[in-house]
Image 1 (cartoon, rainbow, N blue to C red):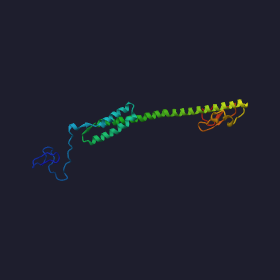
Image 2: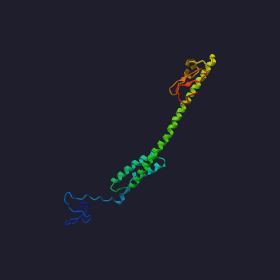
Image 3: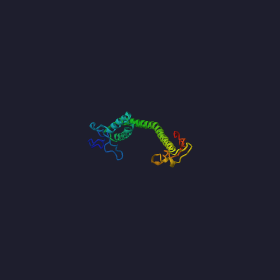
Image 4: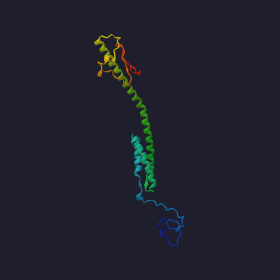
Amino acid sequence: MKCLSCGFENPSTSKFCSQCGNILNPVEGTRPPPTRQPPPAGKIKTSPLAIASLVLGVCSFAGLWCLTGIPAIITGHIARRKIGQSGGELTGDGMALAGLIVGYTGTVMSVFVVLLLASIAVPNFIRARETTIANKCVNNMRLIQAAKEQFAIEHDAPGSYIPSPDEISVYLRNNQIPEEPTGSSYSINAIDTNPECNSGLPGHEL
């Protein structure tokens, strides 16, 4: 009588399998679940994804946080799932777990470093932009003052005279008053008084 669990041929009078001990011809509904046989030794191998997860996780600590941390997490989860479904044909669950831990740690570190660099770079960028705008505004006022002085020389105007934009624009580039970089405007003032920026921002004075 053939055992339904292991396939061993037993004598017809046997009630139990001589090979695995299971009941022969069990009553319907009481048949034990088939025993999973371990795979042959030659078929057991380490999961490549587990190895990749560990390598990527280690690389995330070598300065490649953003590039390898997340792939280490993804390959680690996939490797552990495939190892669990392989029935023992794949090993490397420990490597996959280590890759996950290192990958998560590297990713958290990368986020922290990015935030730290942003907290330093953004204020510096804003200050540099404000300085550039202020320097451009001051340069525009110097051009306006130079145009006023040139007008005064050619027209023998007194220092208290306030020239109009049309009167000094001929001495400026493109025959027009420079635009204030923040969208505000300039007060030309008298010839012997420096022009003023109407934006009221610090650094926008001549």
